[in-house]
Image 1 (cartoon, rainbow, N blue to C red):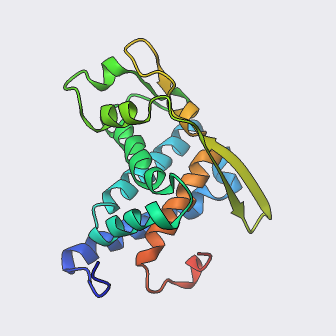
Image 2: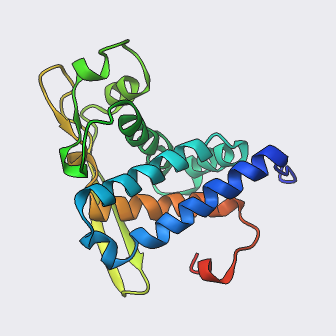
Amino acid sequence: MNENLKPNDSEIEFLTLAYNRFFDLYDEVMLDSFWEKDDWERFSKISQVFVIYAELLNYEPLKWIIEKLKTARPPMESEIGSELFKFVRNIFSHFPFFKKWDDVWINKSIVNWYKEGQTIDKFLKKYEGKTEVKYRFWEPKKNIMTYLSISFPVIYNDNSKIFLKDIISEKDGVKFSFILMKQILSTQIESMKPNNTDL
């Protein structure tokens, strides 16, 4: 791992746009008022963050951070921060048929309608029947600790609908996801403007 690696000009341009949009949306989603918005607005903004984050994971230093998480952080945090979040992003990208979080579902036949063995299929085969993972996150501004579980499908076949809400809940699950994304992305930040000093 080259600690002195600096992004080139095109990476800086992309990273600036992606980070700025991520943090703008992060700040909005963490407000109580966000959860009073209509389903479609919440869903649109949440899905945008998963897409931005998945694109950012192509940046080489972030790949190193994900690898480091496998040994330096609690169990499954690396897999959640990479594989699971990419899985969610891919559902949004490949199956853009839904208007709200709780309606999103897939099954084996729809996942493989075009070709078997792609990323969503691989993820579901790998994690089918795996034990749920329990997490918690702290919101210092509210002085609240929230506990949640991330679950994996018990069965992955043509007949069983797998609902996204059963893997990650919308409110608590999304907030946890965004906090973990922020922790991972913040490893590449040398300085921030005053409005983002709550890292």
